Length: 175
Image 1 (tube, rainbow, N blue to C red):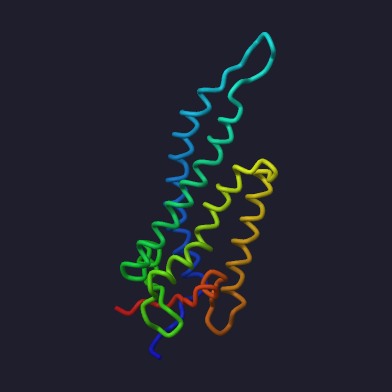
Image 2: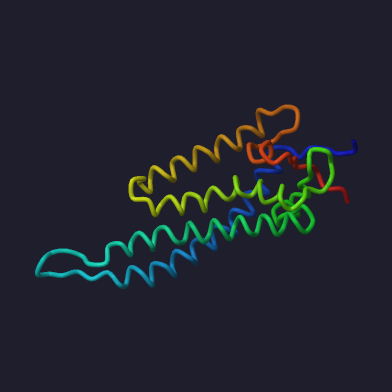
């Protein structure tokens, strides 16, 4: 009662704004990890081999793991304060429970574990050599696409998968 669901494009732009911040953090973490780990790799001209190749894995995986955890932490912290990330503030939308009330901390954590937590999960899976890095990011991209498609196809509550799982909706913020 009295709640107006956020439009799909408002949600998309809000996530895009938050995602830009995540991308900047990821870029900085990537630069730091590359500077630390890639500089430790040594080429031996006598054998034609590189030593310390495992450090390349750290340089690639740590930014995704740490950045994903930071993004999920940001999501939990901001939604826990007032139901809005910076992107939601700009778009004048808010996260609420399906009954219109304020979601509890466990619900917010559950929601963030799916998205944006999927980035941290991808980083964690990067440590398992059986999975290729490209394959992991393709699967993450497909999941994010499917997650977003639910907002378009759910005509009742416009819930993404992470909303359905946690019992939340995104509404227009009241002034």
